[in-house]
Amino acid sequence: MKFIHSGKVKDVYELDEKNLLFHFTDRVSAYDVPMITNIKGKGEILCNFAEFWFTYLDSKNHMVRLDAKDKMVVKKLRMIPLECVVRGYLYGSLYERYIAGNNRLDLAPNMKIASILKDPIFDPTTKSKIHDQPISEDQILAEKILTNNELKHVKDLSIRLYKQMSNISNDAGFIMADVKFEFGKDPSSNEIILADSLGPDEFRMWNKDSYKVGEEQVSYDKQYLRDWLTKIGFRDKIKNASKDGKMPIPPELPSTVVNELLKRYSYVYKKISEL
Ligand SMILES: Nc1ncnc2c1ncn2[C@@H]1O[C@H](COP(=O)(O)OP(=O)(O)O)[C@@H](O)[C@H]1O
Ligand SMILES: [Mg+2]
Image 1: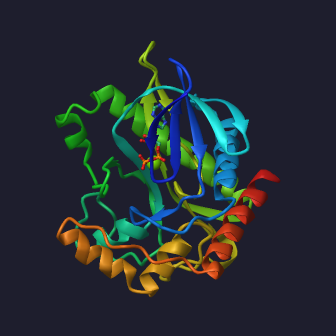
Image 2 (image 1 turned 180 degrees about the vertical axis):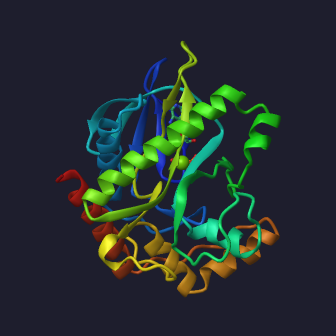
């Protein structure tokens, strides 16, 4: 089996001509920076999540089978170099762009942080090794990443999938604030298929009970790690380092943070898969 790629989270192997093997590792990254501490058991939970959503969602996806608790065989695709982000709430980097006055997405004025958007929006980014950048639909067409029809399909599908995920999350007591999809083309038919993974690294999930507009939300996902990194000043270090095109050395994660993170990952999975 040929090793082909070690990503931020997954190790990818070529199983045969048509299939890849994803090994979901215990690695964790935040703000696009890989941490040096592993979250033992995270890989298995992420693999469970991916299997759950691929089974549940009604769109064609790349999953073939599970080979182990943390190993998924997927169909090899020609990946579309976009992160197809859908957002239902004003949060994260969208909120940062919004208050900075960059309102390319035509959002209503004077909204508070964590406000629900009138309709979910498609807010894609480039796929970059260093830092993903927002990309407009015009740019996607101009750079010939997708044709007009393909873009419409990918956009509609992304929003539809977000709505489905958001509904099931709602039934389990959560708000899915946003999600990131990746799609690829089947090399034989050129059909666009849902790929990569779907788990807490791909979406923001809030508890419905504690949701409050105008405030930072208690989250059951990686936001907890992001918030901790911000608190210890690491977010500023990343911002400063990235000005010089560098990456700062990440801190060792304390066991309290590791355990809390794992607890949140498993809690959401349990609630959702119990439905
Ligand atoms: N079905 C697929 N066929 C080919 N490549 C895929 C498929 N699904 C996902 N990928 C790609 O495999 C890689 C998975 O690695 P990942 O751990 O997400 O790392 P990173 O995002 O840091 O590259 C990503 O580059 C993703 O775009
Ligand atoms: Mg990835």
